[in-house]
Image (tube, rainbow, N blue to C red; front, side):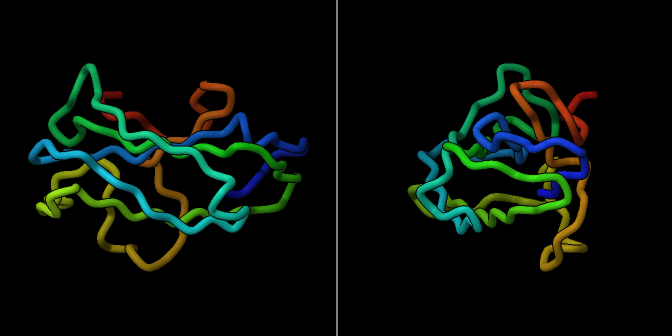
Length: 126
C-alpha cells in the first residue's frame, strides 16, 4: 500500500479486502507478515450477504495503529487456509490473479477503504 496523497494517513482507518469463493464451508485461519509488525494487524473473514458468482466471502485486513506519510508505503503479505485443509479453487475467485502472483502491483480487484469509504479498487458486482 502506497500513500499517493499529500496528507498523512492514520493506518487504523485503513482496511483492504480480498474477495473469493470458499468452495466448501470450514473455519478459516490467516497467517501473515506485516512491515508494521505482525501485532499491528486485525482481520476477519466475512460471509457476504449478497454473494456473486466469483465471491461469497472476503478477507478484511486492517491496522491497529500507525501512520503512513505521503509518498511512503507499507507491505502486508497474507495467506490463509481452511481448518480441514480442503482446497480453495482460486481460478474462480474475484481477487485472484495468477499472472502476477509473485510481484507487487496495483490490482483493482482488491479493494481499499479509509474510514469505511471505498478509496481504490472495484467491489464485486459493481
